[in-house]
Image (tube, rainbow, N blue to C red; front, top):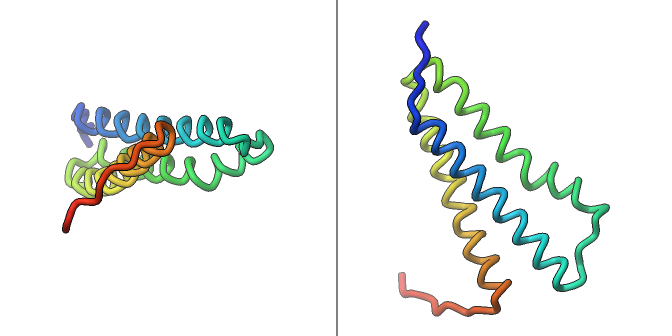
Amino acid sequence: MTLNLDPKILWTLLGVLTLILVKTLLAWIIAWRDGKFDVREAPRFLVTQVLPYMAGLLVLALPSVWHEDLAIIYFAGAGVVGLKYLAEVKDRFQVLFEVKLPDTPA
């Protein structure tokens, strides 16, 4: 058994985990600004909104290190989660800076 130490796996994992962290921090900053931040709710938020995505990515990333054919499943999952969090980070920045972007026709 050989290890697939492809740096794309690690960089993708780091990138998506960074998006998750940025979205979480922005959500807390907005809640703090609006007076809705409750430190007692932070652990529940982490357990229900953050850790499942992080754990899911790790569960997909680790087997792809041992078997390179599984990397496609990891990259697909990381892509979907990354797009979700990228859209949410954009939304949080719009709320934080009170910016309204026009809708583009589909």
